[in-house]
Image 1 (tube, rainbow, N blue to C red):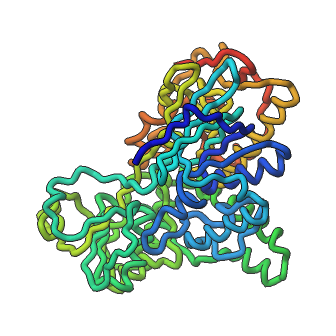
Image 2 (cartoon, rainbow, N blue to C red):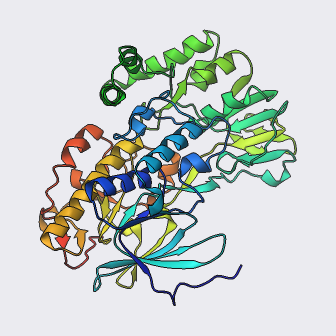
Image 3 (spheres, one colour):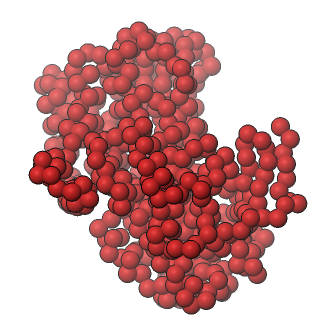
Length: 503
């Protein structure tokens, strides 16, 4: 395909360029129309439609693992079951776009390849390539709003297992699910034990001959009915849905915060509660110690929610089973384990996670210098030193992503308004002299949260300091008070000044 260069074209200018039309980008578009009326903005999306994760993921049973009362937008009540399918989430997002006339702001099939900042012009110049034609387009913008998510869609993480090429069955990754994959009456092995595996396995059991979950180590799970009692009660009382939405959100957030606190204050008690529920579902003779007793404290990795305990009911019924072992190598007919056991399979599914990408794999330059994000410092997980006029969304691990997306959008709109009122054309962040002795470390602490996809990608992420302002916190209850109270004239904000980076 011949690539058509954008160099000779006049760029199209916007006040704000939003990257991505997933849950964060659509949220930003809504808030820009409501809080920053008159702002000229565009949303550039690499895919052919909106939705991000909820459009790109195609594996059986794809559903949220956060409740939609908090994963849904604060401004639009969620009226369905709390754990929702991708189809339901896409329909909800489509309603947001239609109800708020956002479609005209979105350009699909625009994959951003580079973003260059000029301090002399106070402008970002962005190049986006249209994958179906190879054509490149240029845009200029006063601000970039990064809402593209944090991993490479349609490219799963593949561990380097020996002799994979010798396997004669079908091998697929959950992130790269074939459109017409036939697994009826087949012996299936799913490698992995996180939320994706816990979703795929029960949804394959109705057709497959048998599904085996092969895990290296156990994961914590929570189970429950796919319903929120307080929401059901309020609806029986015919309370307005906007009230149901707000009250249910507050109840869920209260409960989540209390549970998270307990995982730090009494981890052994919480561990026993979680494992005890699995023991109740699988019976006293099942080897819970081997297959469902993690070695780490609850919430050091994400706890997968299993609606209606469907994973465990399929295990109890014999339609699925669990093997806890490590892979020695692939064989012609399956997988040889380090214990010496061999698992034969017609189909092997790698539900082994994804590859993180910082800021969408976009090549950034500031005043002619390439920016390495690992050389920057995060400001509250929303801005980075050395990157002016740029705000990014990275949600919570222990709560719904969208809760933080709302807070970041509020902050961004308030920052834009402040700069308009004061006549500032550029803003950057940097620690002040009083923070000269601040300790710099990884973006997230291994003790706090340590899934493998984070640990193997820390070199891609900004660094963090030992002060709250220079960290990405996981505490929504703190953020909801602190982020709206940020002093935009504080010493960490540099307006119309030299771009600094402390590292």
